[in-house]
Picture 1 (cartoon, rainbow, N blue to C red):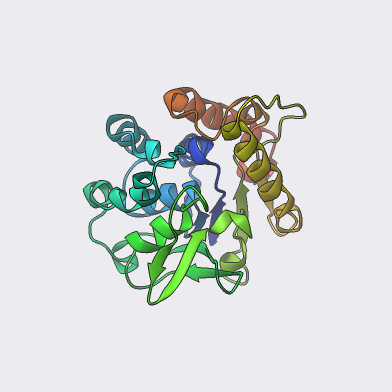
Picture 2: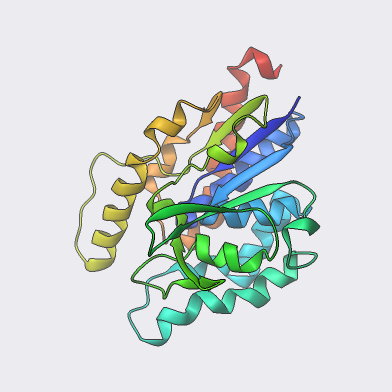
Length: 251
């Protein structure tokens, strides 16, 4: 039985994917295919490379990998996404999709054509950078003469690469939407705007998932809450354990 897992974007909230994967592993649920965008692409790549969820969490805590996704209004901040390359190299066997233990698709947005592009072959790190390149905050990532930004802008639940490939698809979404959000500065306005936009584009894709994991408590975390990584991980883990208990198919 082929199980595909699709991991959404969500900045620091994407750390909850690690807790979800840990809980799924404990119940003998292992993906044969992965698809991810932005933070979900990063988690998916590090997991597909053979790293355990808790190892990836420790890596994020130690290196502060997700600090690169905080807003930086300086001119040098526009280039910070490129400086993640050496960090990725520490956890990846090599810079290629072919080196991964689990087939992975990474989605990004072609900013000039206005369309979603899926990467699953060749160089790995550049697509990861492109997939998590928040527009305006970072300069677009160039790959083969084309320019890419965060894939979540158009598709924050890239289920398409898993269709007709997997018997079951598990969607994992880290962006439960708070019903109220007080905006007091420009960073919060950017966060809220992106949150609303990406949540809208997942509605039809949710229906394509056989199972959909979305921890409600994630609504209380912000996209930049890197300091709460351990707590975010635990929320994903605990919710998934309870979710599985309610599903006879996972017994």
